[in-house]
Length: 299
Image (cartoon, rainbow, N blue to C red; front, side, top):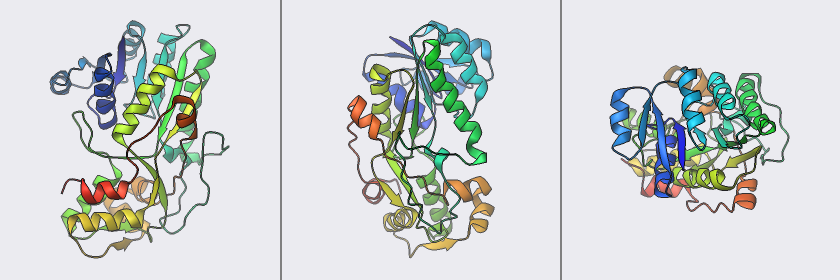
């Protein structure tokens, strides 16, 4: 069975691709250039050089595949249109990667949002997140066109990827800032909380969804949660640094940019992966982001 996967050289995409290959699938992976093609080919992924803006290429590869997994960009409507056009009426799977920031707030690191979302929890997204939500809804709606369309919505992903790119965003960025400055800094007072999940558990869920998910399914992905203060303290212990220090969201935004200052590090995003456990039998292995930071995070 051949799968067309976007983001083959990425953190999530590469890890998912290698899990599929170990399960007996062949994977054709979209990459941007020849250098990345060489890298993914060395891992057993058949490279396809191009971009998400190349509609004809996406349609051709999707049509020739037994299914599509899209991990490259959660916010690219043109790619989704191409996939739906190619797969319409086929009954083939289309797995789209979203992200739990879609239900994130703007707590600026100084408040805990008591709301915890599972797949049955109604929500209204912030205006800035509506374009991503619209794409998710378009993918889910493609089930009405005889596409086995699925949205997979991970929370903070941690752990070492098995593909070309080994690191995620949130925790490595906090660690890198700390290594450069000698101080772990978090936004606000760090009471804001995110759910989290290990990248290998994410890859396992993709495999299960490819094999078993019904059309129109939406899955949050998590196995625990932590406050940013707790994450920062674990990073400080791992790197043998002093006490965590606090940035206002304005100070953090000067370093990481407003989007990351407010939402990547200052928001709450609390979800529960109820449906993946009940419907797919997903049984994540890694349960503590703090243990991973303190025992396994690269220094």
